[in-house]
Length: 242
Length: 242
Image (tube, rainbow over all chains, first blue to last red):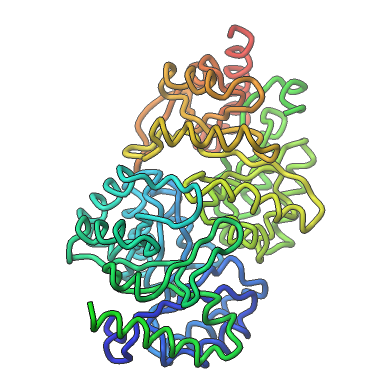
């Protein structure tokens, strides 16, 4: 994240909004305080490639990486095809997420998708989750990290920052060559709905994360810009005091 | 699968084609020999809701269930939203697949998606996969079946038919209340590309499957209708001699 240092932020904005207009407005509000934009393109109700290009252009204005949280979870051959289709993720995403569950070939399948449009992108594998009852056991995490370590296409891992001890051991397992981004981060740590849990930015960064994924803490705030600045500061201070 | 008995087939067609025109043609060719249509709507290059309705209408002509192999793999809250969007899966799919990996809430999230449009659908959880290096360990499978057993929204499981002993034990674990559909089935069992493996229809049904998912064995055949009829016969004979 080259822009992270320039901006003094480790914030990845989870932009779970339903329209491209809302997305563009939010990007311009908080763009100076974040490093990357995490999207779920398949929850955008008014998607057309034209309207989506406005989102992409807004993100580029603020030097944001585009990070589609697709959670690819099929075999490589299918995932490659799913990088295309009408969303054509391969043509605009710089980073995507994938589950390791179906097999290691998923990374090659995704990379092959980018190859088809002569672009290069990076995969973040889900190594840990904070959701209740998830099945990412320690053995699952280890297999995921082994796959990532063996592939130049894997930039890093999504790992749980809610439990510092766990995540320190994730950093030990991962080493220094790959990134760890921690989801479910909120300045007021609390229990979410439908299986979501939150952790604090300082906890996540203190435990070794290189990025914190923040959603409603920013886009649900009365003043999203001020909130984004607060998360940026919290993440950067935590980095400096690590 | 009410139509399965009427037609004498346990075949679920994996219709991995890139255009709606090809899909509609294939459905009319093989419809009488199959029980359900498995789609990846996000690999259809010319998707519009209008063109997709032609696929849905063609499937309904042949009494096929529409089975979107989305492999939902996020938390419940996100999966609910992903049932909508421009593909609006909730409005046409009768069945979807989901990974249990993120947590049991995914089933409720998907069901809530159908609720929003006053429809009822069923979830198939991935309990086993045949792809190389997958992480669906026995403990993972057991947790998946426990989730399914506790939910009326789970109709059944996707389970591996390549290894009869394993799948018999899957049937024992599942009991009789839920279905098992086995993917990667081909009359000429052989190794596929990018992590895919194939098993034989008689093996899968003999091991307790209620449905066999067949892809290139039908849509890649010189005569898809004859191929579909052959798979239907093989599956039905295997059921009768079980």
